[in-house]
Image (cartoon, rainbow, N blue to C red; front, side, top):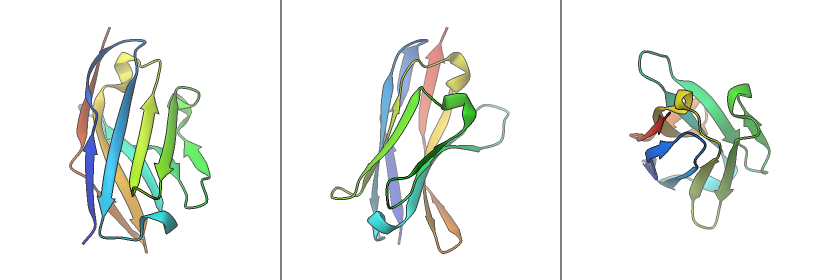
Length: 115
């Protein structure tokens, strides 16, 4: 059973930084694409960043140059370093693991950016 547990959310002022972490279990973490999605109030969820098993990364345009996704395959952990945060980054952030056509979700961690 795949389990994803996020941490690191909180309240930060605009321009500040946060680092999210996601500890995974129940799957061979190193070979799968993993990522971070977010859902802002009243909006649909969007995938903001992903990283493949070989380390290739992808970002949605709105976070390019500000967010950095990384993975530690020895610790089965995924990270999202978020810098120069903006109020529009306020959302619940979810960790994802993509395996055999199924997307797995954590319970999410709330990030609030004040102006």
